Structure formats: C-alpha cells, structure tokens
Amino acid sequence: MVKRFALVTAALAAVLVTGACAAPDGADRDLVDDWVMLGEAKVPEPVGGDCWTTDLAQLDAVLASPSRVVQMPCDFQHAFETVHVGHFTGNLADGSTPPALEEMTAAYTECDDAAKSYLGAAWQAGRTHLLIVPPTKAQWAGGARFFRCDVGALRTEAGYLEPRKTTLKDSLKAGGELLLGCGTQVGVNADTWDDITPTACTAPHDVEFVGAVESKAQTYPADDKSYESAFADRCEQALLNYTGMTPSHFGKQRSLYFGYWMTAGQQEWKAGNRTARCYAMLDKKKISRSLKGAGNISI
Image (cartoon, rainbow, N blue to C red; front, side, top):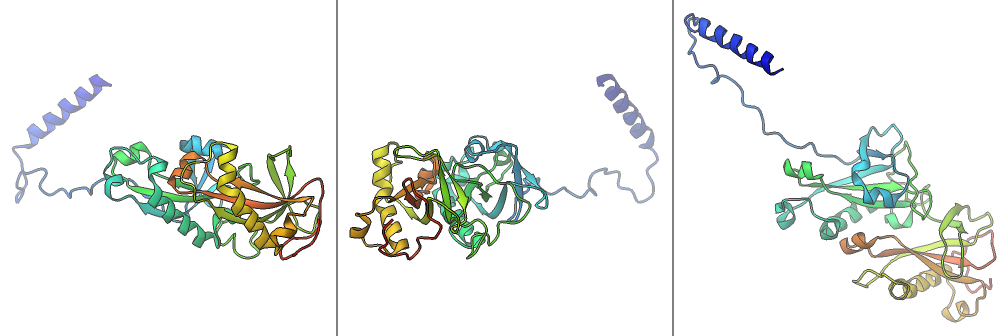
C-alpha cells in the first residue's frame, strides 16, 4: 500500500505540473479559495424517545457495564427509553473526563423530574428504574456535554430487565401496566426475601406495595442497623396511611408487618436517590383482596 500511494502521488504531481501552463481564461490559479469550509465536527446528541438495548439481563450488570447498552429502533425489542436529555454546565462541563455518577446530583434531580412527567408517576411507584447516562470518554473528548435520562422496565424487584417493543410513556398513570400492586414473596427467610413476583390483588398473595419513601440519611446505609434507621419508621407510616390502620391496632397484628426495598446502590445514593419501596407483608398467610383503606382489620 505504501508503494501504491507513492506512485499515485507522483502521477498526480505530474498532472498538476503539466496543466500549470494552460489555465483557462478567468481562472485565478488559486486551487483552494473557492472551497466551502466544512462545519465543525460535533458528537451527535440523543433525543427524548430514543430506545436502547443490551445483552445483559439484570440492572446491576448494566450499571457495571454501561458500554453494553446500544441504540435500537423503538419498534424493535429494547430495554431502555430516553425520557430527557440534559447538559452539564459549570465545573462539571469543564472537566477532562465525564463526571462520576456521585457528582451528578443536579442531573439526578433533573432526570427524576423528567421521568415522573414522562411515566405519569414517580418511577419508584412502578416496575421501572431510572438511569443517568453521561457521554463516553470518546464523546466527551469530542465536546459532548449531554447526559441521558433513561428508564427501563423491570420484571421483578430483583432487577431483571423486561425488554419491550412499546413505549414506557404514561405507563405509570392510574391503571398503568407497570404500576406496583400485589405479589408473592420469593426466597423468604427470617428477616429478608429475595424477590417479589407480581400478582393480581384478587389472587392469593402475601405482599402489597404501599408507597415509596425517601430517607433523610446522608450516609449510604451499609449495614442492617443503618438500613433500618433509614427506612423503617417511614415505611411503617406508609403502611398505616395506605391501610388506614391505627398504630395501636397495627401493634396487635400477628401476621401483618412491613418491608422495604432500597432502590439505589451506593453511587446512586450519593447522586441523590435515597428512596425505598415499602410493602405490607404477611407471614405464612395469603389473602385475595387489597389492603388499601382496609382500616383496623385483623389479619
């Protein structure tokens, strides 16, 4: 290839030298002054409504390997949907590399609001999850300063993705298909469970979503004690508000208790997601009705 390139270059030079003596009338002999300058190269930006796919099955794997997410036409099966595109400003935009998730507190707030508007309710109220996606290092080096706000549908609380061919827009409005409701516990032991399988509230079930709460704790709850401190009181109150049960009557229950599932990992917590989903749960018992507004019943 090197020899060929040299030969082509020499032949082109010979043509230019030969033609130099025969410029047409009106030619100014300047070979470059009439060329239109190309616009500055710019990294293409995503837009709201873009869709993305991945070969990974769980949300945690996506968070650990964001490069495994690629754009996909929305009429094909996809795992995530962009609900908003924002832009870094100030010191974050001036950095030599994309910001870490824990630095993106303003971006998280912007994305959280955008997701709520797009879905029809807070994303924590459904089998959905919000991701903030900055540019890649190569895009950042090319001048990109955008961030994507993506939402994905989940099959269960354990974070298994549920790819789909339809939009997530308005999927959490009243009656929405992805709103959390009743379910059955999976992998139950003394103090924890592994997952929740969604179930109609008219079918036998032992768990019901009663609301999402936000902790005031600034430090990520890294052990059982801090986890309980962050969410227990708030989730108990969420259960009481949902059922209409008084605290004293709740204290007499033998089978009814509450549980919570934190929606954030450590980096997401630092970015501003300090929420958990709260559930009314039954011990070794199932019912076939909702507990919403049930009042001081005994279970």
